Every structure is written in C-alpha cells, then in structure tokens.
Image (cartoon, rainbow, N blue to C red; front, side, top):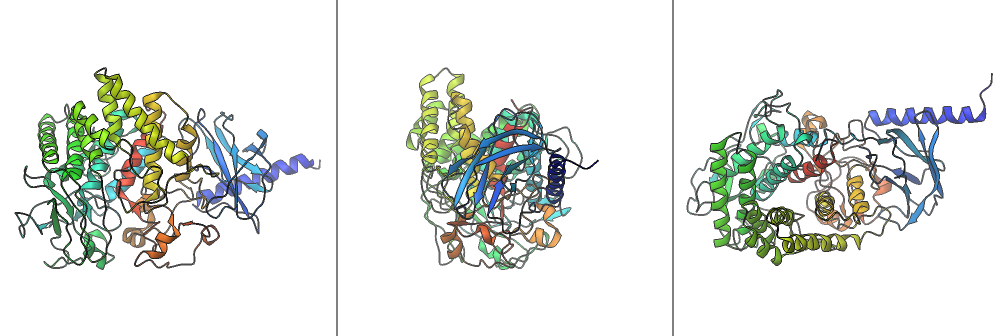
Amino acid sequence: MPATSKQHHMLALSLLLGATLGAEARGQPAPAAAGAVTYVRVNQVGYRPDGPKVAVACSLDSARVDRFVVRDERGRTVFGPRRATAAPGFGPCVVTHRLDFSALRVPGRYVIVAGAVTSPVVRIGATVYDGGADTLLYYMRQQRSGWNPVFRDSVHRMDGIAVEGPRKGAFVPVSGGWADASDYLQYVATSATATTSMLMAYRDHPSAFADAFAANGAPGANGIPDVLDETRHGLDWLLRMFPSDSEMYNQLGDDRDHSYFDLPVSDSSDYGWGKGRERALYPCTGAPQGLFQHRNRATGWASTAGKYASAFALGARAFASRDPAFAATLRARAEAAYAVGLAHPGVCQTAPGHAPYFYEEDNDADDMELGAAALSRLDDAVRFARREPVTPWLGADTARHYQWYPWHNAGHYESWRLARARGDTASQRAMIAWYRAGLERVVARAGNGFRIGVPFIWCSNDLMTSFATQALLYRRMSGDTRFRPYEEAALDWLFGTNPWGVSMVIGYPRGGVTARDPHSAVAAQLGVDKLLGGLLDGPVYRSIYENLRGITLHHPDAYARFNTGRMVYHDDIGDYSTNEPIMDGTASLTYLLSALASGAR
C-alpha cells in the first residue's frame, strides 16, 4: 500500500534525525541544507525537565523564523507549533530568534524544526549532566606536574630555582601541581583558585563525584572520591610553594617555556641551567617583577596570600576525618597565609618574560574576604567585602588579562554561609544584594538573542562559567529566580548555543561538536582525546585576536562563515587565544556541573 504524504514526511524526519545522530557520533556538525543561512543552536549536553529550555536560531542574513515545532525520534510533533521570538543580532548572526520550549518536560531525544531548518539532537532528562563534573577531572589529571598518569612518568621533576628573594639562586623543591594551560607554566593564583573551586564543589555536591581513580591519577578506585584526590594533588603543591611564614612563592616558569612546543615529558625549555632542567621560581616580593624588558605592577602579597588561606582552610575541613594530621597542617598554613595577607596588602601579579603578557590581577579584597570567611572570621570577611562589593568586570565591555580575578567573588557566598550559621541577617542581606548588583550589570548588556552580556576578553569562557555560577549561588542564597534565564543561557552557550554551534569542553558531550584541533602539543602528538574535559579559552573580540603575537591559523577556517562579527573562534592549533584549554576554568566549571547532577543537594 503506498505511503501517505504524512508517512513520507515522518520517514524523512526519522532519516534526518538518524543523519543528525550519525554526524553527532562522529563529533561533526549535523548536515545543513545547501546555501543555508539559518542555524538552530542548542545545548548539546541537554536540558533538565524542570528547567528553562531555549534554542537560538542564528541567521546570517535577514531571514525570519516565524514558528517552530519539536519532534520526537519517530517524527511526531510533540510540541508546537509555537511562535519564535525575534531578537537583535549578535556576532555573525544578523538576526536571532529565541525558540522557547520550556514547557516540554517529557524526557527523550528530539529535534527542533524551524521552517526548513532542523537542529542537532536535543536531549531532555534529569540525568543529562550526571558525570559531567568527573569528566572535567580527566583534563586536570592530564595537567599534572610531578607524576603524570597520562604519560606514566614524572614531569618537571627538577623544579625549581628561586630567581628573587632571600633564597635567590637556591634550589627549592616545588615539583607538583598543574600546568596552567597548554604551556607548562604554573601559578598559585590559578592553582589555588582551582583547588578551592573543587573543594567547594565536593563540599556542596558530594554525590556528583565518583571514585574511579587512585590518588596518583591511575585508573582504579581507592575509596576516596576522585575530586578529593585531585584537590590533594593541588594542596600538596601549594604547601611546597609556601614553605615558611616568610617565604611565599607565586609562579613557576615564565614564557621561556614557549620556545619549544614539546610534550611535558620531553620539555626542552632552558632557563639557564640546561634544557629540561630547573625552572625559574618567583617569590612574592610586593614589588614589580620581570627578568627581561617587561615588568608587572605588583604592589603586595595579599591577592596570593588570600588564595592560599582559602584553599588551605577548605582543605582542612575536607580532610579532617580522612587525614587529621594533614588537615592540621593545612589549618596552620591557612592561618599563616592569612596573616601574611594582612601584613602585606596589595596584589601579587604574575611575572612576564620576553612577551608583555601576564596575569594583571588588580584586586585583593575578594581573596582576603574568601580567606577570612573560610577561617570563620566573619567581621574581617564583611570588612573586605565592603571594599569590593561587586567584581569590577561585571557589566564592563572589556578588561585587561585576568585583571579582576577570580572571575566571581566566591567570598560573598562563603560569607553568607557563615553569617547564616551565626544568625547575622544583615550580613546575609548584604551579600545577596552585592551579588544581585553584579548580575544586574551583566543582564543590562544581554539584550541579544543569546542573552549573553559578558565581555569577550581573553578567556571569555571563564567569565561565562563564573556568571552562571554567581547566578546559581544568588538563586540559592535568595530564592529569587529572576536571573534564571540568563544563568541557563550562559550554561547553554558553553555547550553549543553559540554562533559556532560548538561545545567549549573538549570531548563533552560524547559525540558532540567539540574542538578537534586545540592549541596543545599533547593533542597534536597524542590525539585530542587526551584532553578530554578541558574547557577552552573561548571566543574573543576580533581586535584582541588580531593584535596578539604569534597567532597563525594552520588550516582553512572551518568556521569562517561565523567569524564575520565582532568576536571570533577558531578550531585551529594556531589560535591560542580562543582554542587553548585552561586549567583554572576547567576546575571552576566543576562547581557548576556538580550542582546540576541529578543527585546534587
């Protein structure tokens, strides 16, 4: 019996869904119609049944999208037709349309059809984010210095030699920790922030983490959640970097590392003591630093000391029952670091090398607030909080590299927790109000179809992660849901609801459209799968990309159609500004993804 036109239509939809799934399994964009100018972008990880669900149609010309439907795997319409909401253009998207299907709550796999355009597969389910936080830990293990489980060998065993301070020229044993990105420099600022983020993630959402790896990162359970194994690796290194109350180090290595594009086990960088030998170790000095023609603007120790204090204090609580002696050491070093911060206010920026690039951190009040709150010093925490109630990049159009770091002030949340425990409602209200003020500033810039209001400076995905995290914490603290659509929009952006349709976490979700050619010697020589879980820097303003040194695309731009606007993203090993994975951003994202797991409190 001949098929009806409806049956033909359903068969075509089933075949299209199959083609979409096939492309997804290969990690490639789903096929688009010839000459397509409109693309439906979705969160490739998925949507939870009770949460907002919005896809964005990006049109590269003035094409309109009037209505859309959602169809299931059998081609049946299960939602719609609904009207698409027109919104201003953004980046290469001349116009955008928001496709809101929040009312669809039934778990399953779907596609969105808007005219002749079909989206990638859409997943709805309570467990879509389960395992996400643990996926990020794969990248953290790959970044380990000292024993590295990916190479089954030790990395940078001879670190390092102090280049300033009272022990100038002396060997100080500080091997360990994590490389900062695809180079092998190591910073206390980012490593302590990463450690703190993971400790907070485990404290607040312990059920989101599994135990599948040993303490050294090798496969095999050891009775300890993997996130605690990773935080201990970070804490051990931080203890080595703060060996005495008067000796606090801030940085290991400088851009002499960039002379070679080697694997870490065969790093040929030469700091004057021979290839692959000791690296330069920079102490906190309270004065501008830089061994060559460029110098930073350091003024004190507190920005680094506060980060030490919070990581150690939270670590002491996390390991109190598992390893009381280790916890006692951490508690003592937390108190010592906090005292150093009080005695030496000001910022300790990272040291540049031959290039003018460094982490230009200009604030220390947020770090000291977090340290004070983690040490249960509420009066001190509130005093520091008043010095910087709103992190300055929130609402700004630009900022210098890592100028306002960390990207969201976790100290406000810790102060709120402490104030709640002590019944201090005034301090609770203040922390809530300050978070709200920062969120309002970003939302005021987010009138575009993607609902994105962060500036596209270098490491924009860090900002996206922190905005979503601050919005989540604000909602938890206040019960106010007004920023929920923007929180979800930032999350969706990270996982594919962006003009390029790319998930910004390497290899996640499995089979999704993610980076295949990141800026990494490990990926180039051993395969991109070795960087599973790494969060990319993310899109930047074209003006930043065009003015950075040493960027040259190695291949034709696969996303050229989408790099015509104010910001750009390239999946190319030659673009370190948008396509390099970042350790601190990856660790910060563990908090957000652990909060989204189905079993999280």
